[in-house]
Image (cartoon, rainbow, N blue to C red; front, side, top):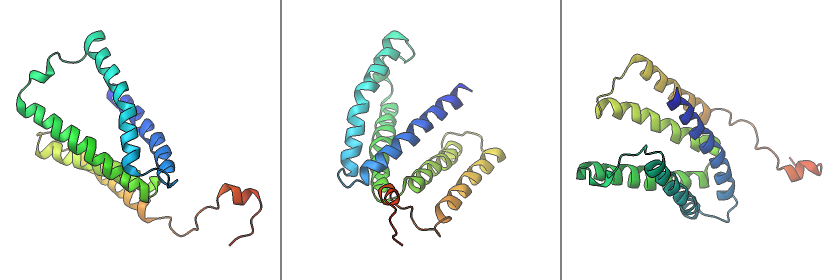
Length: 169
């Protein structure tokens, strides 16, 4: 249950944060690389403080992690740092700069769990149950419906025009 609550918290933070990010990117005043650089710069000191608290205060992090096998460090640096950290964030922010958060976020965040379930099974030997398969299928189906449906109506009129009784088309 703790994992689910933490994941829900992360989802809430990402959902709220990406609405702000999309708004900034669509202002035309900030580009995706600038946005992700600012995000990372602001997040880094907070992460270091959390790390120090976990390491020395709560002692919830393994000591001397930097002395593990090179293969573990390589996976951490390549997989978590470069692929998930840098490449995924750059691609995601680039997508947000040209697309709608209501489409980009579900596509990105449905692809990730679907691939995680598949790779968990193929690479990590995790059980692939019928329930997991159905869940992934439902998530992906939902994203297909979300991203292909509802395109019939015109875009909502900006608030300032609606306020002044604009009689535009």
